[in-house]
Length: 230
Length: 227
Image 1 (cartoon, one colour):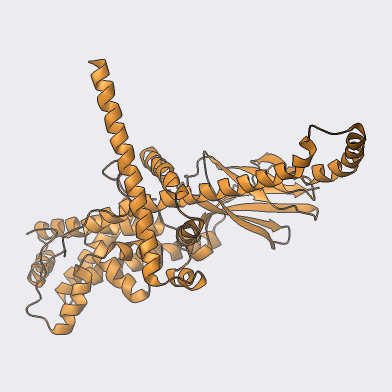
Image 2 (cartoon, chains in turn cyan, red):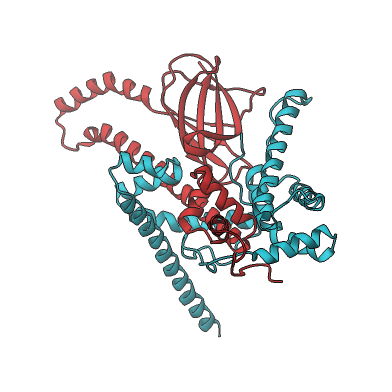
């Protein structure tokens, strides 16, 4: 069984009361041109440090995120390192025939790494038994800062959710809490896809609005405090 | 050579390659990323999204922010759900006793009510929930619980992250007796269970919330005995 998602990364930037899911819009496209992919692959093939460094810069965060999401934060650095070694060695051996497909190639390697790791865990669990009885459970807890951010955001959301109608809230419960697919929710609640999207975006806008209000209140409060102190 | 956000130009490759590569190079929409986080993608979409994410720092940042947002949404919804259940229960409980609060009873009325109360109260008392803390793990001490009473169990979730969970009760044969959802809050989970009539040993399992209502990882296992 794949472990469920984990939040690993460094604490996100911005306050907890930032507008909800409507995160910043990135540039329209990302990554390199085919010529650049070709250059990168040829640098790695030639064993140039610059190529290795560039490959690491390009993929390390994404690979780290992917591996952590699939396998959890245990021994993460080792797994990232192993993945890079496999990719670099494969490129050096000439296994990558189309350099512009490097992104897909890396994905295949990472997925195989995940599958191999899970297989290894299953095998170990079957073949070995701990002296102590009971199941060893990995620590899934986020760091205290993230815990605090999530807690703070959850409080903000509660006040926003309380303002929603029972039906609207029910839709969110089904989607986020019970993790029902969108199609099922639309079918069972007689909603069109547009209505469903609209409701979610309305709820998110409300979270954002309440977050902004809280921020504004905090701002006024801190100004008052400062002026009172001086 | 720029690491990120370079415009993609596929001049030398064929048209199909352009389409293939475009789906990897264009940033996924917010909806797409949400589907990715909620494990609701078909294979084709998953491939293009994952491939893109592996090489895109800005999308990883967006995902990290959305993960926090979704975790907070789940907690808020779970807490509100629990709150509603508790409020409904309290309302139901108070309405049972509302008739008992009249101030203008005659002596005869009071006597009749008293006689009625003597007959009725034990029946109501029997259905009040049995409330207890449960922290015993399998293999150690077992919590004793009375049969035939609804239960309000406060489960020890120390060192577990604040997140929604699913709760499952199985009997000694391993058959599921009850399943519900809750949330870890202040290192505890409050589980409101219906009455269990059959005496015997039971296991109560806490799972991380998984995909499509299926249980996620097993977080804790408690044992209790219904007597």
